[in-house]
Image (tube, rainbow, N blue to C red):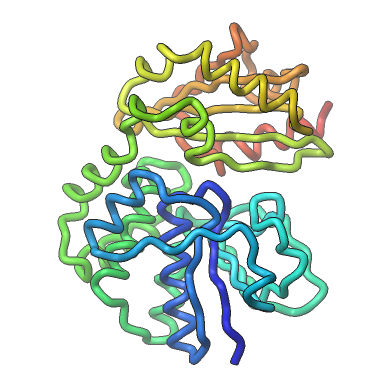
Length: 309
């Protein structure tokens, strides 16, 4: 049997790390040799979950072809979000819950469901194979669901995610609500972050009708800390835009308690984002009331807008 490296997207979040660990364990249950790895350092929220359930963070890699011939992808499928040498290995598995931007010359196991979290897909896979989920693994998978659904407040959340979270909380032996709030708050300490860290905490690249668009998202409790650093953040975004092929750089700041967001925007042409959200960009900023999900409330709307201009 092949040895697999299992990994999620760059700038990993809690779902990416938890799902890589869970999928690696799943592959081992199938009889494969497997190791979860990460395409970046874990953030504070993920570190909190790993410490809570006493699980070691996966090692960070920048290449994979020098180690294995076969890989499994979790929580992403678009090559622009993945490891640089992805085209040099064979992707045998994709487990995801995002839009599909993946092409393959050979058959593979591809499972993508329109639900709130990759870990929920994996929870279903464990149940379908009647594989037991250890306590620590259940805790990490629960953490992923809480993180991706903002404790069920995100419009991406489904009843499947909620049911899975309740069952995983039992296995992990934690109070879902109490632990959920602790986890989310662990990821909102932005005051200690540098501007570069803020921009890269959870940043993804998207191809939109020939345009490269970067959308980052950070969770906060209130907006004051980020707004106080607005000029420095915009300057860094502008510098990165000037030195890259990006058409647009967006940083979404989400208040996890109020379920509201605003976005900072840098780009020579902001027509698409103004069209997508039906408001002008004023001083590099727009308001996004009720918006918490990049996947469902930002990317589709912006993608459609780029297709219309």
